[in-house]
Length: 378
Ligand code: ADP
Image (cartoon, rainbow, N blue to C red; front, side, top):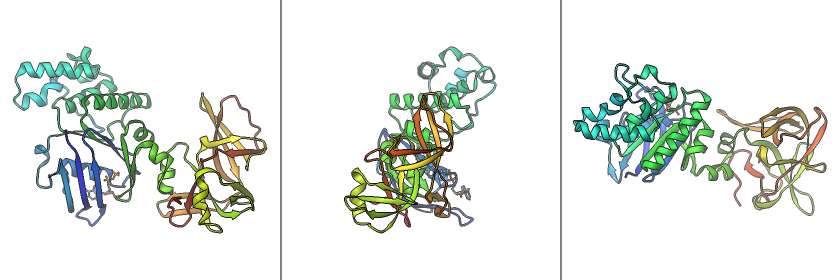
C-alpha cells in the first residue's frame, strides 16, 4: 500500500542535459499510472528516480509521505520489469520464480506455496518444471513478471515491458499485466511510448514532453479534453485532424473559415469562439467524428481507403492549411490538398477523386490558439 509524491523534481545529467524539469506528480495508492510520451521526453528518467537508480538533482521523492532521496534502490521494496526478461537458463520455471525468495532466506515450504500461487495467477502452472529455453516468448515474459510480483513488493515499476513482443503477444500480455495489477492492487508505474497501450491499461496517464508533464488525467479525459495540440495529436490513432482557420461571424452563427470553406461551430466549441472572433485558430476533429452527408460542411476529395475489417479509413484531401506539432513547435502547412482522415462503415463505397462532403458531429470540434497551441477554454 503505497502512494508516491514527486515534488519539484529535476534531473540534470552530468553532461548538462536537463532530462526532467520541476516535476510535481502524485500517484495514488493502488493506481496504475502510465508515463507516456515520445522517445527522449524523460519517462525512464522519472521511473529510474522512483526506483532509486538515479538521484534527482533537486526536489524530493516520497513514498507515503516519507522522503526516499537517501534510500538506496534495494531498500525501497520495489520490483522492476524491463523489456529484456533475463531468466536463469539452467533453472526451471519454478526455480526462477522462487529464486528471489530463497535468496531472501524464506522457508522452502512458503516459497513453494507462493510459486504455485503466482504460477496459477499467470497461467504458467503447467510449465513449472520446464527450462526457459522450452518456453514461448509470452511464457518467458510471464515468468519474468511472476518473478517481479512474487516478493509482494510495495511498488511495480515497468519500463516498456512489452516492446520486444510481437503484436498479438503484446495485447495478451498487457491484458495479463492489467489483470494482475487489479488483482494485487499494487501501485504501478508503467512507461511506454505507445498511446494505445497507455489508453488500454492506465488509471491515469501522465503525458510527457521535453521533461515536463503536458497533461495528467484518465485516458478519456485526455482524449476528450486535451489541454493543448500536442496532447490532442499524441492520443488517438489515426490522429486528430487539425486545420488552420479564422473565426468568423456569419450572421446567425459563428463559424471557422478554413481555406475556401466555412465550418459552423456547434456545441461546446461556440463559447470559446465568442471571445476570439477574427482570431487565427487551429480547429481539430477526430476521424471518428466525421460523417458523410451530401450537404456536409467540409468538402473533400477521397484519395484512398483502407479496410480495417469492422470499419474503413478514408484518406481525403481538403483545400485548407493543416497544422501539426513538431519538435520545433506548431507548424502550419499551406496546401490546397491537406490530408484528413475519416472513419466510415466497412460497406460504404467511395469514388476516388470525387468530391464528397463531411459533417463534423455536434460537440466534436476542438479549438486551439494557433500560436501557443493551448485549447481555447469556455
Ligand atoms: P524516455 O524514457 O522518455 O525515452 P529518457 O528518460 O531515457 O527518455 O531520457 C531523457 C533524456 O535524457 C534523453 O535526451 C536522453 O538522451 C537523456 N539521458 C538519459 N539517460 C542519460 C544518462 N545516463 N546520461 C546522459 N543523458 C541521459
